[in-house]
Length: 241
Image 1 (cartoon, helix red, strand yellow):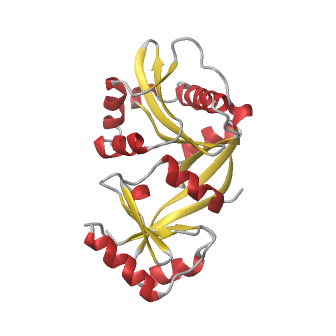
Image 2: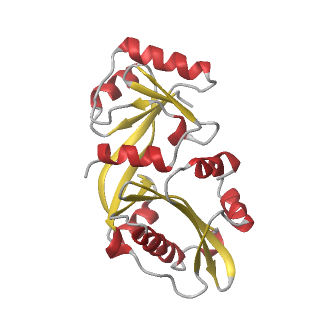
């Protein structure tokens, strides 16, 4: 499996408010839901380049919907990346795609530690908000059309964490895992990941995927200990800060 294989899973499990085809690009309307749902990307994830005129058209269309120049570039799209860099678009947020076998990862949570619930509870939205995940990103979760679930984590009977997962074809993807600072490094992230995989396995998923920025070493260590392996990466090109 390569990052190109996961591109449809990312798009389906974390969808924009709308998307339109323009030449080789898909132009999404992110509705304020962050880079992942707002970045233009090559519609064919196997493709590697676009013409200067096609890039011009993509940037103009983004501007028409009130979005700045922003592109998602997969790790094999070096030709496109070179063109965007030459335009002065800065590299942002290199992100690793990590995959684990769903059955191997799956494990029911210990009693009263993690609950699967849809829709999310009010306390979960508060935990997400504390981590910068506000209404626009909750709207992304609401837009998913395949199997989906939120997970509410507790430590010592106190609200401590929340996460969201959705499935496309036979692949589940975890998004928006947030643990309150005072409850980190207590094993809850591990419990919640395994619980989410257990739910996904029951839904028929074969693989479980998560995304992590290249700078997030603690999360990378957690995922490696759970048996995840990196299958590729992507980054963004956007206006310099």
